[in-house]
Image (tube, rainbow, N blue to C red):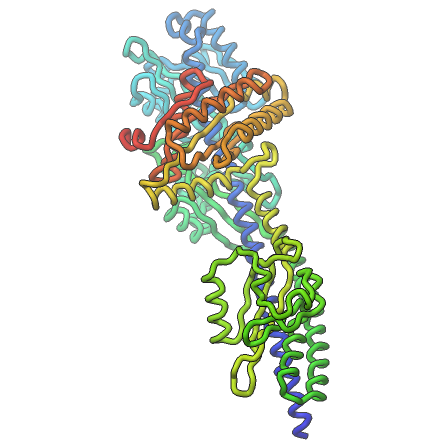
Length: 633
């Protein structure tokens, strides 16, 4: 009876010993799958947020530039100087063309200084129409016109988002609009205003990155009401009494509380993943309450992927459990028939437990035995290495402290496990998961070391390749914005840690007049231009320079160990090379700054310098140091 109890006890102990590591692995894999699922949700929402903010910023900047071009045109200046029927018709025709082609404008209006409309062109999404003079209205009482009266001379500002009204009544269906206001002044005296109404629905369509049915994008006001979204039946609660309860403040209070307490964030609620960010500086004036971009992602598609991954893992777990049971049964049977507690038995047990490439060394760490799997993976036979120390496989990739810690754990715990890089007989590097355990005699004195390892070289190569793909721009074949931000942050860390030793510069390069190439020659030619510029930049830059494509036609350069004067010479050399070696007379403009303080600070300086290059004729390099921005601030 006691014999069977002993066998059962040995079986349980062996099962536990063999099963503990696979069990931990399975648990870890379940956690990894779930964390990967969460990371996918977060990344998907972050991609939409990033794309939305970038598109929104570009739209506002483009429209702001367009408004300035409108008021500087000859026909506009003629109608200001002499508002004849002929001059007004000329401006109206131009405005009709602009609203039909650009599609963002729902109204373009010229007001006199007392709020009376002088010219008005409406666009309903299909056609543009000039409003007859007898239908023009006085808008002196409207909030946005009172705001316009506060503008400085010749300034441009935005009024934010409200709803279209005609003759004091909301336009049906409700039409949220965003207004850009330009003060028109002559001889330091206000003579009127240009007010451009922008279609929020058209802008909303342009800023959506992912149009899948499980992803919805909404524009939320400071009271939690929806101003624009995929479901307009629950929108406009701030002006429709019947929808007064259709607000996040009531329907999803935890999410709303989070939105009120932080500028951006993510939140999970009722099988939906939410991500939000404030639009403090894009669509609202600083005196107004903030707006929010809210993204909601349904979990249905991700749940299916998670369930499939978990099912696959479950099947592997069952197979692994059966295998462990078989191994445990075999080992119990073997151990029952071999009760000798000699060193040979302990070595056999260690070898069996390894089930992989194995090396056995004596107490002086001299190799005494290897198995066939070791020879297959490393290229060394027993005759090649017997009597030598395992350092013969060393790759030189690990510091002395690494081995000191390894030996310390072996002496104290009797086991060590970790990832190492060793060298194959042919000189190639092998990445391994290495496990070393000690074999002690009855007096607890170490007699042997048993090391087993698994070759994970190909897996590491795949991981590195996947990491590189996630950080590469496929079109330009250089680093992307994600990698650029990481490198810029690292350069700032070095600059802050060694302010007297580390000197580096940041440059932003933009292809001049890129939009006409796309519009006139097609996007294929535009892509070729980007490839040409990227190829020249990589060819002409120094080995230590870092090049990334950070926008449509924008490239970022990090020049380590380079003064701003040296960087200026390098950038002008790049500018000359691009002008010389590209087709379509391509030129570039660049902004240059030294790296200091923070990533955002340096990027802003370089962007301001680029803006100066663009506004002073393009095809040039401008410098805006971090000290200059600090002085201005």
